[in-house]
Length: 555
View 1: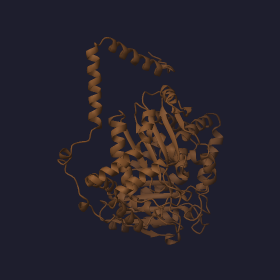
View 2 (view 1 turned 30 degrees about the horizontal axis):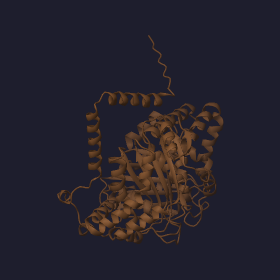
View 3 (view 1 turned 90 degrees about the horizontal axis):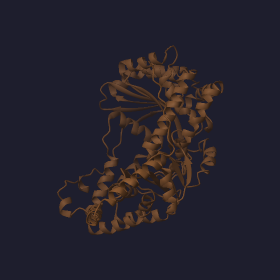
View 4 (view 1 turned 45 degrees about the vertical axis):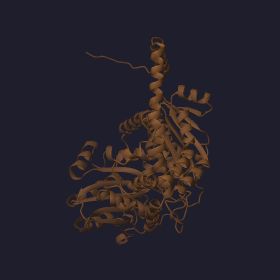
């Protein structure tokens, strides 16, 4: 026996749901007496009054809290040792010796992506999936997965894009983001006894991944398309945040090109290519691999990052030396460009494409909620960004935006993301029943900060609470491998320990006037823009309220 079920999507479902709700509410209202309606109105007014009211000082005093004197003034630093061109291999090895890692080595192998064309960047997420899912060498997908699971604690491949502090620049100023590093990262962990297995798996992933499985490529692409379309509806705030960042910095654009709306559009093209022009797509994939593993240049762009206790680092050293000998490329090959002194080669093409993001955008999907974003630059390039800015941003997230977007607005979440590197701030909401009202809340943030600064002059405990919250973000508990990863990231972006200490002191020394300065900068935000994921009906209502956007159908 067989049953065939055909599902046909409805293009009018949203309107039907909205109309059904209106009819149901109208029926309920018509059945209520005048007294019952007045009671509902009174209760709603009381609820809003309670939501907007502050907790009484005596109630807040019952909650245990830290004082500034309880906080450590020294910024935590983690072990790091750099060995450039180790053993004449052309590869930079970075080590982090921890007190204990329970006999486990955490390893990352970085391969430089800059030799590629920006046009090939959308292929990279597919490549990283194929490296762990398509099989390699003599192993089919199942056998390769079994080998990884048997001998290691897991292996993954990903893309790293990060702006760096230019050589000789003043740290703490707003950077252009045009000096950046792009790497493909192979990450894994294994006990010291199994480290050779992990390194063999890395080599297989790099050189012998099976790129020629048409069915696997189509499967991955279609799965990615489905997952991303679902994420637009379920995690629209992440999509909006990526789109906003793509308008202001090249690194943001690259991230959006490999994981945002632009990538979703590229995926649709890649599926068509895989189904109708497979030979051309396979040639592109093979060209990406051969370009990354170019004999004359790939070694100089490689980095090996290793975290472990002393006994682990000592015991795996022979294996590291063997890996460095066996990696693809010429140890005496050409040197790649200095990313701390020169613009990344993808910058010109990326900036040309970024210029097209010059309108407020609304991404239309079938949904009953909105994901509302607004962003802009608060600092001119070269302006100093103090650590106090992170305190104010944290205060906005946990105070004003929480109260007005979530508590009173009814959204599941309301927050902001601030970058102390670029000076970009993005306001975001999650599963929001409002659209235009939330944008009005964002526009009121500067006035709220001015009022908060006045309150802090009268009640310093409010400022103390804000500082303690921001320090909590600096002092999160980290596992040994996370400490190693943090140290590697700090080194990679060329950030100094002196700057980190200065930044922490600025956080601890935040004053009410810093809130006022932040508020003034919000009022003078450079090139503010809007990106929203919502329904057609919500966009139509926003347009009537004077908030029009360029609408783009996603699904």
